[in-house]
Length: 337
Image 1 (cartoon, rainbow, N blue to C red):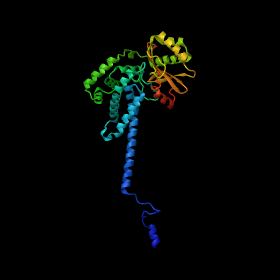
Image 2 (cartoon, rainbow, N blue to C red):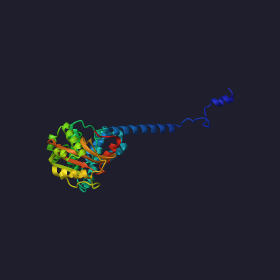
Image 3 (cartoon, rainbow, N blue to C red):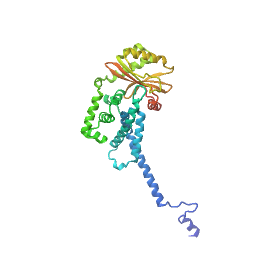
């Protein structure tokens, strides 16, 4: 073998034209980085799987989709920094974190709502895409209804947490006690007190889904045509109309009470409605609702309380800040029925 051939077959010395063998520490660091990246991706994927449930929990606690999103994001930061090996049940761990974060937010939220301009209503959420989880039963739909979320404002933060975990997520009193760090007997007492404070006898006589849909569909059609006589036939004599403009848009600062007063109010609204405004039927908070929009921008979302075959209450959110979440849902795909 010639010296030239020997040089050609010899291991490369790292000079130009060859590749030096990888340093062991470099390989180890690269492997560690790859493992960390894979673990981070798996952690994010697991959180994503629980995200709808966590959002639904925070929304029921807060009545605000925007604050619920922020709460879920805070929960993710805690999840990312937690020792995953120490979390035996991720769903329970996340529910505990989200509940406690929501309780912290509720204290300041209640103070703001006391100073709110006009009636305060929860933020509407389109629910056909499962944003608040599966709503396959009347009980599940009722748990996210605008009417119930308004009533939940009567409760203390602890009462609200106990009620939501029990009614919407079927937690046992023992599980709730663990989440809130209370005694089990105490949780039972708090739950009983919450149920009594809500005073919801009308929930036992809620109309069938088909009747509910028919009534709201008729209201949307009459509103679209400006048919006040048709609207009169749909409204209960003691109907109440709430408008939430939050001081950002023109809206009634007090509830409008009684069929005649509501009809006069609607006649005035019709005269002020800008050209190009459209109405549509959509599922909001698990129930059929009227949505008003113009050129792709939401203007108002109205949900309905129905009883004895008539519309007994209408709650309309017009505050653009409160329509922001629903507006993003609209941008992602049409929620119209």
